[in-house]
Amino acid sequence: MIEIRGLSKSFAGRRRGRSGVQALEDVNLTIEDNEFLTVLGPSGCGKTTLLRCIAGLVSWDEGEILIDGKQIRGPGPERAMVFQSIALMPWATILRNVTFGLELRGVSRSQAEPRARELIELVGLKGFETAMPFELSGGMQQRVGLARALAVEPQVLLMDEPFGALDEQTRRLLQEELLQIWEHRRTTVVFITHSMEEAVLLGDRVVLMSARPGKIEEIVPVPMPRPRSEHIDTVEGSADMHRITQQLWGRLREWQVDVGKARGVAAAS
Amino acid sequence: MSSAADVQPLGTGGGRQRAGRPFLSRVLDSKLFLRLLTLAIVAAIWQWYAVSANALLIPTFDGTVVAFFELFVDPEFWEAVWVSNQSMVIGFAFTILAGIPLGLLMGRYRAAEAFTDVYINILLVTPMAAIIPLIIMAIGFGLEARVLLVVLFAIPMVIVNCRAGVRQVDPTLIEMAQSFGATERSVWWRILLPGAMPAVMTGIRIGLSRSLTAMVVIELLLVAVGLGGLIINFRGQFNAEGLYAVVVFVVFEALVLITVARWLERRLVPWASEGALSQS
Image (tube, rainbow over the protein chains, first blue to last red):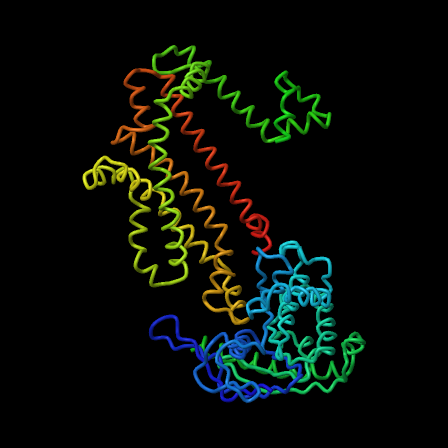
């Protein structure tokens, strides 16, 4: 279980005399074990910052994050991250990229390699072990990113808009496969996205965040049955899916309009 | 090396019209053939100009070639090669040993940068030839002076490239490593060094050619020993063929060293050329 209590973080202003940006303001959130939580919000709402805090990659100003009751102080072996920019090492083969996390944790190569090969097969890249990252398409590269994270057998998978840079077809395929993998492995997933459909399709709950200051506005449960991966197309077209997406859009549009009005006032004065 | 054999029959002159034959077209398209062709054209123009000018200080191409091979049996010449390369080898070795770590550290740590940045910039913008009298006055005409000049010539290029190499490493790669619990030491070994490798190799290559330049420049300008000294001697004797032959040798040595460096670069960082496109 991940507990986030009163988390606040601001970035210092770039220029002197300018106030900083309040990236996160009083964020409170409890994530259950084996939950698939999606975080949705406009760009600049601090959703990625929130994920980086959970990953232990950045520090924060106030509040605390506990995993199974223990305060986190930096990255830990129970968490693994999947990056939007994928972050594969261009000089290493696919196999070496997947064993990377294991090797950093002191697992010997002879033990790491069989595990890496298994995961490469799981994400559908069997036969590409000795390929270099630049030989793979974006979708295939992100499969490697997923395999690398799964290789360390994390309790918590932190995914930062992992499919954001992919084309529509590839994205759908990967969403389906991610669901399949998660239905079998049952790790906790925190999944950042800016796509409403993706948030609803994948998540047990959708956390809606608003920008400036970044805070949680609402948590919307997604009461659609699981497993969803087997009949993903029916799920996509279902009335539930439509209703929840509309609900999310209603909220998001309100803020967009509000922000637009505020901007208009500022410009007029 | 197979292309060298392919080129043989071309000495008899292959017409473009017959390039339809696969063997010939392959030869005509080969890099080596084009290079040899350029060389032949340059040699022909040179020969024609030297013969028609008939001046004392412009040797003919064939005369230069003869002088070039005469040099190879002259022990005095090999003595000069040894003396020159001594300063180059020592200076270049020092440049590598000191320049690479310094550049790498400057790329990652602000403090290292703050300490050394000004001096690197001074070295980069100062015309090095202007420093030569200063060096001579300070430490004399010995090997040390020549080594020092080689280092001053070469080290800024090595430092600047290594620094750029570390800086251009994708920051999310560092973050990725840290998310898996990498220490600063692991980040260096597993991310920064391999990531900076292509730029480091470029720095080494440029540093090498700068070392060669420095080696000849100081011998020509102030300390008349080695190959530079030989050039000055030949000029004094109006031995144009000999002078040209030495210059050709210097060019040749430079080409060989740069080729070796390029080969090493391709062997050590094969991902650099292909990976660059997909990374952007």
